[in-house]
Length: 213
Image 1 (tube, rainbow, N blue to C red):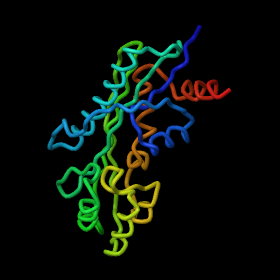
Image 2: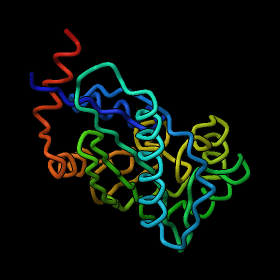
Image 3: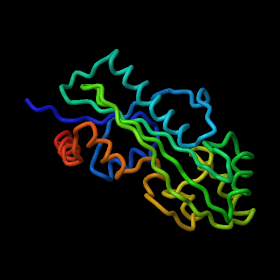
């Protein structure tokens, strides 16, 4: 019997989950539990790539301890995003004051959002990983707009203290690159990584459609 591929998303991000679902894949979700503070790097690309790998590997280790009963081929995806702005590496803000200070610096400027992707095929042990990077241009917000946005709590939950698929979308003038990178998962990049481990996007679509019947 041919096994169907099952994607496990090693992330609690609702934006990543929604992006994958909109792209025809309905993954299982298993939060990695990785402490992001344990990794330090002066390179934003290295930082997000390392964290993406650690998240994928943590979920793979848990699944190996308690293997799924399904015969499906299990693929684990770990992702991590950071914003590079004016030489700083910015993950999620520590608190409202941190988010406010960031927006004072970011308004009217531009930064580079990096998202690391790590894909692990639990059957073969194969791994494919890469980083996607997209330039983000921020609007010149007023102090009142910054205060209002920070008070919603949204900036505290995301890397770089902004979104493009939520309230933060009002304050992003434009992007140069794949918008999925900014949301948290690049579908074109993920397609290439799936190909590296021998899976096509069409197989993932069929698996999602079959599981929904």
